[in-house]
Length: 347
Image (cartoon, rainbow, N blue to C red; front, side, top):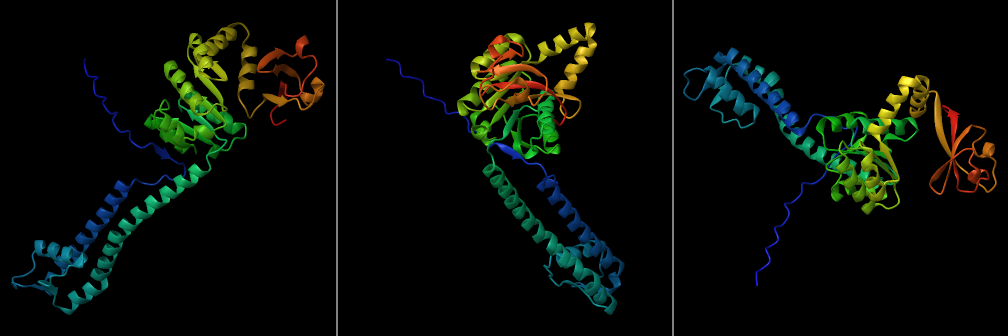
């Protein structure tokens, strides 16, 4: 009987990286190079001083101080090693050592010790910020993908009053990730089809998830994974092709936007009715002009005018199904219905 093939363990995954806004500082490597350059500059400065006043120094062989001797003296002096084989002999050289060389020695120690302490403190600061950030992950919105669609979704949320610290972006591409951090959003670096990446973004406690990758197959897999972790969050997903929309619906997306189809319909309408397209664009952008607003019906039997605060009603949503404003089925409003009305910005 053939033996089953041994299982090959999966390679260990790298820890998920998180970038928080407001921490734009040079990397530790750059800072170390800056401190190293300062240390070399101090050595060169002391060496030049020694060389210019070389007649005031003596060495163990008493054959004069060369340029190499000056750099050697500067190195052992600034690093506080001090072998004593080269020493200031004249009063001027001793005064120079007291007034200029000693401060360089102290500054070198500050650079050396300060760099170590700063790197340790930076790690502690980053760990504290991450711990504090994770403790606040609740009822937030996760945006998967910060391309054209993801950026527009983030800006729309901010325009509608959602604080930036309640929006978390998941993105793999370096430039898009840097752009998101620069705009004030926390970013998780990783593949959103992975469970550990979604958990790092707090998807399990999120109130909404926007799925906007560049590929439809990735959107389907992300939707399935998000729904596995969070069955209650409102999931809105975008696909390029309409034929893939039903897959996202079956995967658990509450709303599916067909980006290519919607753009094509607007382009077609623009050739015949351009003013209609302008109004639609105005409705889709928050912060200016007209807006579509959704209100919940608070009690049974409310009139349309009461439910919408007097604004024109475009549609009524009952049990997740939208109805026309004049449909007979929704002539009498019920508690829990939602009315979509046309309002001025800010009303």
